[in-house]
Image 1 (cartoon, rainbow over the protein chains, first blue to last red):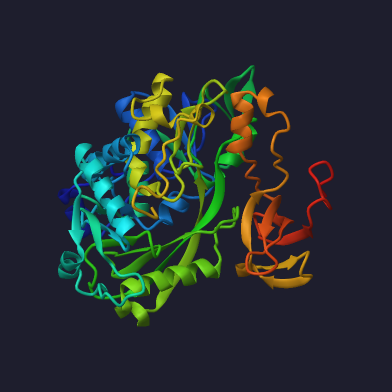
Image 2 (cartoon, chains in turn orange, green):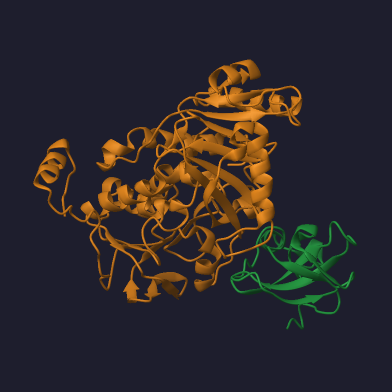
Length: 416
Length: 94
């Protein structure tokens, strides 16, 4: 395996027309690790990477039941921003944003992080009051944000419909210039490659079927590839968090729902930024490949089926056409769903549990992708020190008992 | 998308007419004064989130507007059983 990518390695392999080296080695599980991470999505791989890089724990296995980049990491709409209202949430997402800003260099892998800005549209006076409040909170928290009016939006995005005759006229927006998008499955590959370079075993096609708990302490896991021992286990299994928790006899305050997205055929560049609207509920950007990437909302019922209902697609398409009538003849190429675990307060759980040595990082709901590096970073420190990272403290699972919820639902300016 | 047999309208109608209303058989505690914080928390926030056949509540929003119980697979979305309240309880779920 090639240890480091550089212009020289590219030139050498390109000129020589050699077979390209495999980016991530195919590992077989050992019988014992210091730490096991259940779930090889972006958050799990980032956790393993920062465990190895910052906490000096390299005897780590990441167990993935499918393949790297095949779960929610490869299913989201790739939006990255940190303009959350609450101090606790904005600190966590801003921590993540700062890691994004150096991530490609840090991982030696181009995650195609593109800070093209995000507009969160307001369509009513109350929307605009909320936007002003959130922008002020962002500025106080050191997060870049400005309020823009509909004229400025039209100047920046000429194809958007700012007509007063629209059913839900656009009145203004918040704009975060440092926000943007990244190549989502590339993020998983980058973290997996960088982690395995530091000695982490990335084990694909290995499903955890049970968690061994003895006298309140975690001992290891049973998998489809055999039993693996570890004193510390971190669960980062998104939509399947409740299923994994049940193996250890735990319940979680999350419910799993399908979240849908779709992409159009590839087109020439037409939309240079990210546009989100909570009121009409849709969000859209254009990938570097040229397809429009469109995100919808969740279905209200519980599901593990990775597909949603047509009603949601229709609702979302209507919202996008409301904003961009020019897209009415664009043909959609693919549509899919992912399973998201939603917390009652729409904030994640990054926490130890009642089982000693068992940690959960879950409940990211519809907005986890943007947090990938930050989530992995604080979770790695939480596992390594058996003590929550300071940014993770408000996200303890006990908040559902104490009542100290983080009321971010709807306040964040979206539709994540 | 799926069809739901409303037990009151006695008709198979499009899912769009209905709204999901959460897990079934979650009864409000009878002895609120005696409950610990953990027990309250479990009642208010914690859910089974079952993968497989799951009893849940639906309401016929754009129809008779009545709540009822549905046993549905959260893996395939197949509806296995529909019942009015009282016909099935947490003590005798099928």
